[in-house]
Length: 492
Length: 117
Image (cartoon, rainbow over all chains, first blue to last red; front, side, top):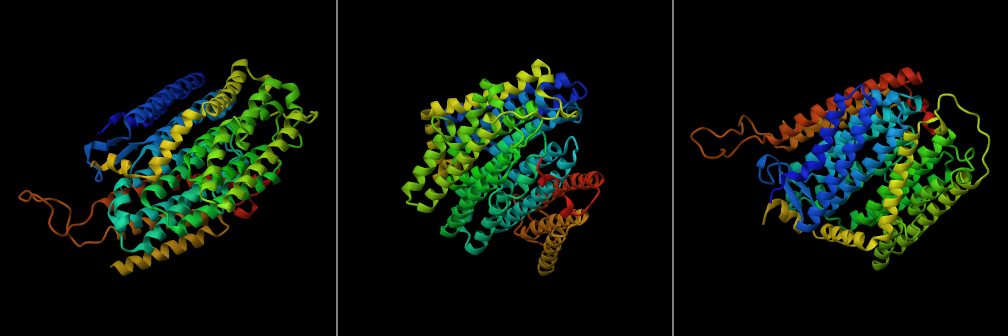
């Protein structure tokens, strides 16, 4: 059942990136192509999700080489849903970039690189080959390196060095793990590996490989104790870039963990304990870190870490999907506030609610969704997570989840009071920043539209939870029982 | 041969990690390069080293002989080398730019990202 169209979301992004390069010097044309391209990409990925939903898992064998010899692309519900989310965030960021990214950055190829990054993300979600996954990871990190350094400000370059060093290290660890895995089994196809790894007699080496994968993906997805590069770098580039990073880059690490630890390595007691402890400490350290910060973008950075802990704790996609959307929006919110006020400092901000009541309302949605207030999207994720923990009588996990949620609530309440309710102060105008009022109306609308768009999606998910819940249950089923996946790839 | 490779790989990993732990930016990059080479050799070693048997099916035969070299690790290494070459080129330019802007190559003095804005 080979379906060549499942790589369409990947190929289309490449196509858009190439077209954009032909419009190198024409900024406005680039903006138009990027937004239209992102919109079409979203439609394509939605089509893929519907197709997977109706006809089951879709596969594509590259070059007609039958698995496990060639490179396989697989779209199951999890992959397809994440591709849709990537396209959604991509569209929002693309629209936001129209208003917020400075011309100097566009001149150095901001838009083509953005689309190459989204291509890498879609590819990583769709591939069924572990070495191919490594290649997609490299495409993602090289694009993100360019995005994080483009503009070349001092803080950006310093943040980039930390980011580049940790990501290259993670890649080497990942590559080492692949090498050992190949030596053990002689296969790279994930479905085939699932069968082969179970037959390896040297269990010690299998566990070492599993830990190497855990460390490699752990660095990329910023879990405790490997997250220190994230708060040092994510707040340095422009908000549009932070948004796509925060929303998607760390999630691809979580996705890889989900895949590898449900398909290839079935965690034994030791591994389960390690993952759970890491997840719980990630929740705690992310929450406490956010509490200490004054710069709102750093607060969001730590909140991302905190919520990666939640995702890991569930190893459940339901929360992953929702939170990815919510965090993308958070950084966009910070960007809009910055444009209004010209600072990210919580102490200096204030009076936002009085000036922009309607916008504040839309900004409240992603903030409250992150806390998990019903009926917003974050609520259902946390509810499912808690139910799962209760079913297993895992008291420690319940305590940490509630504690993490409480910390998030406290931080968001503090942020709301400081930024939105506190009386505004007179701020000295900074010359080098273009304030929101001075922007052209189209740019203003583009920035606000993307925040409203993501907030509305969050609301829709919250209210249409029944439909999302079914999707989540199907994903959970697929993860718990990988045999349909294996069958779809290898044939019966 | 295998023992020799094992020792070299171990040394490359150890040296790479040691270099990464130093404070100088240049040493950080050298460390990453050493680690990358170590990983490539590891793939080569774990692909099982076989002497002088290319994986080519002769014109008169229908399948490979009993002993042949696995071509996959070489393809993997080639891919990894190309990728790491690109990444290293980027990283070297990055440290050069960072050195010009920050005016230090000591990682401990790069604290701008921790300042309160």
